[in-house]
Amino acid sequence: MYSDQFDVYAGNANPGLARKICRYLGTEPGRAEIFQFANDNIFVRILDNVREKDVFLVQPTSRPVNQSIMELLIMIDAFKRASAGRITAVIPYYAYGRSDKKDQPRVPITARLVADMITVAGADRVLTMDLHQGQIQGFFNIPVDELTAVHLLSNYFIHKGLDDLVVVTDLGFAKRARTFAELIDAPLAIVEKRRVGNLDQAEVLNVIGDVRGRRAIVVDDEIDTAGTLMEIVRALEREGVDEIYAAATHAVLSDPAIERIRASSVREIVLTDSIPISASRMDPLITQLSVAPLIGEAIRRIHRGESVGALFSSELSFTQEMLLWEEGLPAGTTGDEPDTDERATVAERA
Image (tube, rainbow, N blue to C red; front, side, top):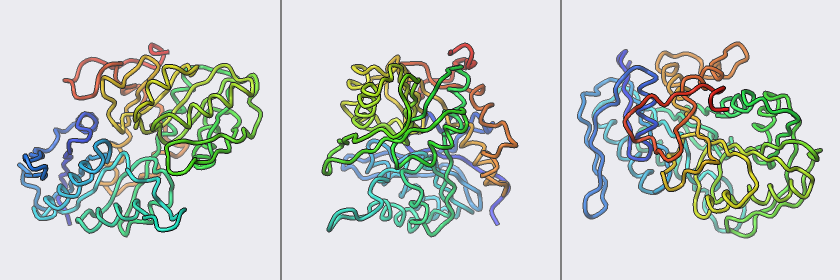
């Protein structure tokens, strides 16, 4: 049995999100040294006594991906050797999620490899958000809680008061997009696409559904180079859609995503802070919502042995309350600045 106390620790991938989670929970982040030596070896030293404690390690495996993964693995090993009672890896963004199957000869299933490494390192459970495919949960031999930002994103658009909407997505995100469409009471249209080789390029073949004359919200789990998003935008424009919004959980935003977004006709892109957005990648078109209260509440429920799935039941209004807690960061900030009075209501932002 671990002690009644739990602590939240953060790696270097997204310390701003970890601080917000701790602010929501009314606690201070745990103390640890995590840095690289001159030879690029990573060093971790825990500065608190964690014996028999319930610890949560917040570390999205985002850019630089391989360094973030190694930091997470070494952190897990350090806490295991420090006799932590239970170690939960909180991974808001799970890298290598696209490599979840053998779709070509002689290729790896890297998503499974990363899962094996996290398990072998000593994690007791995983808390993550909007995996690229749900079957990645099955790659772990430890419990996995997968949260979703669909309710948070959909509530943002509900409060904007837009009408005559249609939700547009590809087949890979269709199940969660259907939930998004039901929440905002809009029809769902599916985009048929295919990947061009192993490049970050996609070709849109067809738009299945009635979109002409409507306002479209393109939803997906992540925006990487924005190539797929731009193909969908062009396809919607050909179908007679002239007002397009986009929403995604993970703001990967690899080059040349920002240039493509700025040159497009998209009115607004709504993202979360599962991955930090640097000042150079922020843009007035981007609205960032914080998932800190969602992750924080999940941490509290995991520690207490309560249901995490109940967060998304119709009986709770928690996802609506999240928008009032904090809508996101102002353009040009990264989440690493000192906390200021940056909260605003949805009505004010709209």
